[in-house]
Length: 267
Ligand SMILES: C[S@@+](CC[C@H](N)C(=O)[O-])C[C@H]1O[C@@H](n2cnc3c(N)ncnc32)[C@H](O)[C@@H]1O
Image (tube, protein in one colour):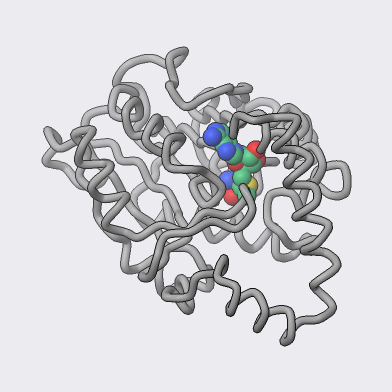
């Protein structure tokens, strides 16, 4: 399935007018988001502080909706399991060490934590509200003995993490909310924390038309842009075709160190 109509520019006036005509009931909600966007941008000019405030505002209503745009618990559970099953099929074993960037309230993290050996899961997020919700998920799922690490991050330099440590780095629905400079910062540093043979999987909102953003919340990139950006930091990108078959509107890229021949983690 993957991204559906990848050529449209959601920022274009024609698209917005057509969308409003087709979905008149969604107009007030979008207008409220646009107002919030303007207000939060004024108060928080930097992207991380701005997006942290967006998450605080969304999480005040529902943490499930904050991480997934959908208030349904079933949808939350389904998307989490989809991420886990995918990595399981791609060789994730209990002894591996996994870093989840933008772990949210552990929609997928709870499955990774349950599967991995104690202390092998490390989740980071920019939102303290979401990390508190993540702790609630740990308690609800009885995962305390797995001793996962959950850390607040202010950027993606990953400076507090050790060299060559993680077999898998995973970021789902994070770069779909990130401007280019945030993604580039991540690419500049993620190679250092990857173990030999490790990989970094992330999803993104793909466009085959003009790159664009909706408010300061949703960002649409061409695959080539991200592939070139990664290459500039010594990372080889592979488009994950099998992810496109799943019922999810984002696409997935896998990055490995160029110096690394192995494409997947070993058993
Ligand atoms: C749409 S939610 C997805 C959460 C989780 N990955 C999942 O699939 O359930 C995006 C999460 O990424 C976090 N986030 C956004 N930008 C980030 C960044 N630059 N660094 C770390 N976390 C970030 C947000 O706070 C939020 O919890």
